Amino acid sequence: MFKAKVYSARRKQLREMLSGGVVLLPGNGEASMNYPANTYHYRQDSDFLYYFGHDHDGLAGIIDVDEDKDILVGDDITMDDIIWMGPQPLMKDQALQSGTEHTLSGTKLADYIQNAISKGRKVHILPPYRGDRWLYLETLFGKNHGEIKQYISEELIKAVVKMRSIKDEGEIIEIEKAVDVAYLMHTTSMKMAMPGVVEQEIAGAVEGISLSYGGPVSFPVILSVDGQTLHNHHHGNVLQLGRMMVTDAGSESSLHYASDITRTVPVGGKFSARQKEIYEIVLKANMVTIEAIKPGVYYKDIHLLAARTIAEGLKELGIMKGDTGEIVRQGAHALFFPHGLGHMMGLDVHDMEALGENYVGYDETIQRSEQFGLAFLRLARKLEPGFVLTDEPGVYFIPALIDMWRSEGKFTEFINYDKAETYKDFGGIRIEDDILVTDDGYRVLGKPIPKTVAEVEALMNKE
Ligand code: GLY
Ligand code: MN
Ligand code: MN
Image 1 (cartoon, rainbow, N blue to C red):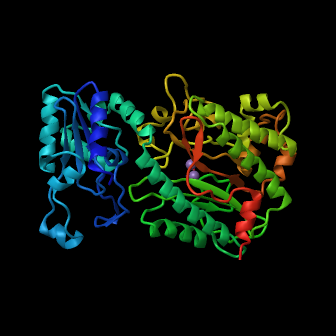
Image 2: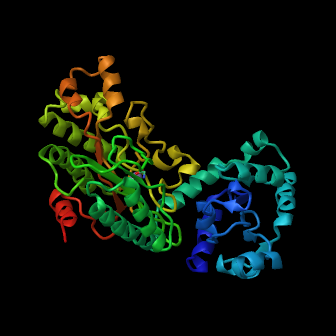
Image 3: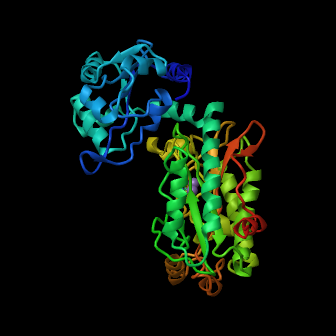
């Protein structure tokens, strides 16, 4: 945990941002996998972590704006619990670690909430994203699912997004720790990407490195020679010369801050001319867009810079043609770059996505596009110092999409389909870094992970 004063200061700031009422932040419970006592790896709710810090089940937090008071809700454990889990700190001591003196038994929480409602006080909750939390809230509120929805508070969502979007020094240190573990995950993956190796051998090693540094992976490892499938969790291919292997993987620090890095390497450690040509396009898109990151710039404009860079590069190879501005305006490049340039990152790898992507990545000055490709951009709004975001352009050759667009006669003025067809066995390339927006520009977080052709080849061929 951070120091107690970090959590009390965050809650004070939140209370000052809200007009009144009481905020309820339920912590996550354990989630059963295949029978009740066999649970998934436990993951605390990120908003609870942000405001109260404790990382185990059985807790909730109350931030009472009207009474200017915060309460950690939960119960001291029993001897049965001690036998199975070992001794745990008393609730009063856990409350102090969260920066408050106030505790409430979990058995009294329903009364607290229903009492607040009966007095006409506003009760604020964030959007639940787990089925069991909906059931828990139904019990607490004494209301059904449909009735609970009225307590999801836009005022609270906006305040939490505003606070969590700006990372403080302690948070940046945590994220950087996670990126440094990702350095080890990715350099290991690169060295293992040799012919005859099965993807799962590398995926297992990569995940093991994250665990061995104390945190789980920040999302299921994406590792495949079929990099054209953006979130590919199948790890059954045997690596062969001539293929590119995408590794998109990150770690969680012990306080649950994420990293999210992608590297793509040629199996065997030497780029072919064809691989290098596509790789250099993606690398350029990654590098020119990182250099464009600074406060006051819309990330949508930086995404469009990536799109133009990719379109230009593909034009030079004869895969695309025509006016670059028109290609990007009409969205033809999205055949090869069908996703957004990046997203916020913090306690969640796609930070705060549970609160609603549009609250995080868009605001009153910028609306989400409906155009294929651009519509998937998670972060579009103006950058501010303290944002941490990913920069992850890619070029993919998705056979089914090429076939579909070709059969529809889509963008024939911009796409040379005969040429694109010859890349159907190529796969995809993505390069992703984690970036802090500083007062006057950007900082790429963590120890630099080999990225240029020369750096990747040098690492993969090191004895
Ligand atoms: N790890 C998924 C992503 O890069 O957003
Ligand atoms: Mn990623
Ligand atoms: Mn990402």
